Image (tube, rainbow, N blue to C red; front, side, top):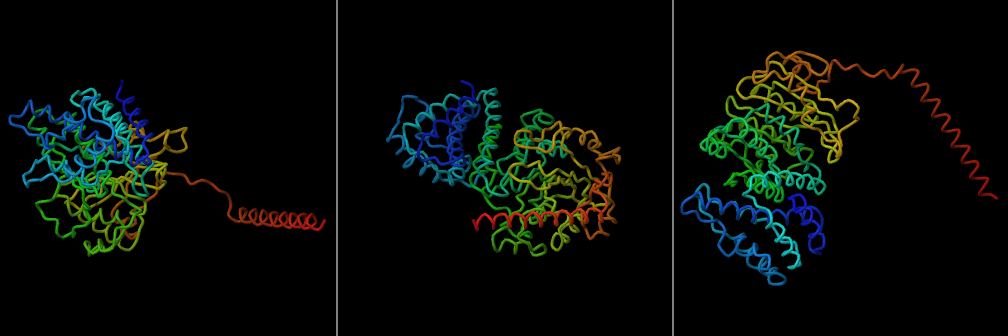
Length: 484
């Protein structure tokens, strides 16, 4: 059976269980089960390649010892084992302070995990399906990685406002423009399910990882934080799928909960790649951590944090809503700070439909480098492909749709850029003259001719008069009918 069919059959089994209610619970249930199988397969490999390797999971609770036998424990006995032994043990694993302690990964993942299933027989059926997948097979792992991304897309329909995920085409485009390398520290302060991290790993493996040492350097440079339990769980499992032995760098925390000033020089990073949540509000008190930029708007707080966290020469690519470009007040102060501290060299303007159907909001990709102030900003307006009115769930944005921007970009040095139908440049003086409003529209776009305003007003008045006359006639007809 193919991996795709395996996942589909697992979801069909879960739908029969009275305890699993909706996509979010089904995905959460899938996640901890796949996590244990992936860990066990990794353990088997590490036992062969590392002397004296010991699994972070106690022997009794390793997948091979309770799940692998298709005729093994089932029914009420399996349900009791999972609820009363497996979960309490893994939630309470003792953890050392040593870096690379894989027990921390297990404990952190199970900290917010639950067994939603109520039927031991159905659990056994699911477990047997999962046992069929060999995560030490590169082909199966890559295939499952694609299925896993589909599972992450399914999660979007279970999310609330601000919890949608960045299309793969955008994460790939941003990562390729930033070009991370092994040895550089890369941070996503709101990592969700790990889209930017996985794209960065794939990019480095394809272009820069040539030796085991460079792979170790790549893994050592990754940093990530996710606030919500389910995306955190999905991200950790995603890292294991991509061959990361120790994904404990994915912390379950709120990056904004620390005072801005407390982030020291030793925590500065080379690269930030992120799509911070926007449209949401932080809990009371969080804004006090940002005394210079006191606001509850999440996107603004993350932008202030990113500017602080970058090393001199560090580079960032960030998704931000239109409101961050034209907003006033604290937003003005924040944009002034960004342009003074960083070279905001490029803004890619995206159509409202990029994140549909989960959000219909204008977004932008901001690319900037720390250490030198901004002198001018290049804008690129991305357009929906010809013959298509908007992006949608069935017709999403794809990498080839961004190829014209890649061709215009000018390589690593951004050389040879020219203005054109989709590209224009704005100077710092023009930005200042507009009160740091970065919401510059494409000057090459010809405005639609809607006609003479006075004529339009006359037509509107005539239409309103006609509508009023018809309304009066309808009232008269109804009154006569009621009198009969």
